Length: 278
Image 1 (cartoon, rainbow, N blue to C red):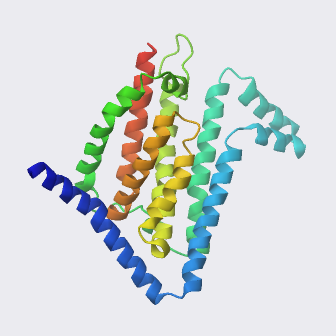
Image 2: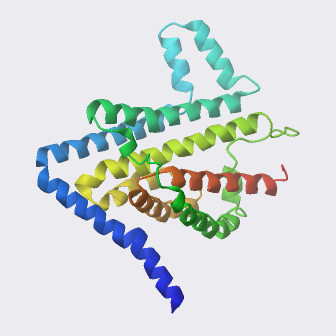
Image 3: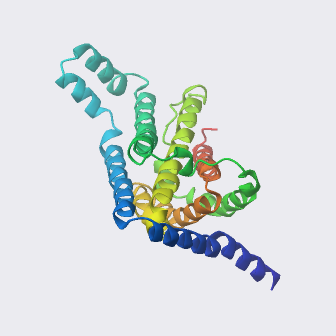
């Protein structure tokens, strides 16, 4: 059937061919590179990933900052931080901004420093290519369209409504300015997330692991969703494989970031709508 032919062509283009090309490039790399060098690079990428994930697990809540300021005797700053995060009428917003700052620093700053100063490679080679990516946009639009029915179904569940949106509007509060500012930071966080998982991890490990780098990446990526609804955590497995493969295909994370932003934005809008806040 014609539809079967289209599916087979799509699968071969974005998975079969990508796997073959990535594995072939890995084999060529390993044949021309000393094992110690190849292993060193993979170890550096994995240890960096462990540091980033540790930073995200322990560093995104502001308690540690207040304790640090108290510990070093900077009482004025400690009191101002304590007020901003625990007593201010904008404590929710301030805490989310702190979360966003740690996310950006962890996902982007740490890997970039390692790429430039330790691996001595170009950051653009880790999924930041922009040339020629416009022609790939249709694929991501189709993926977004395919995800919409599942998002709509999930948005009706109690677990979804309890989790989203992250920024909870107060009674009578409008979208401007705090929700809009939060959405901009939230969007930037997804670009950073895509750079780390589909850029740094996938492209950092592909020479040593070949296409299996995608599956190595989805393990920590899936674990990142353990505090979210179970359907979202399960979807992250398939979504991680698809976005990882597309990153290898396009050498770019930009469309993946836009897809992630589109899905997250839709989830927030649906949640707000169902709560009668739009």
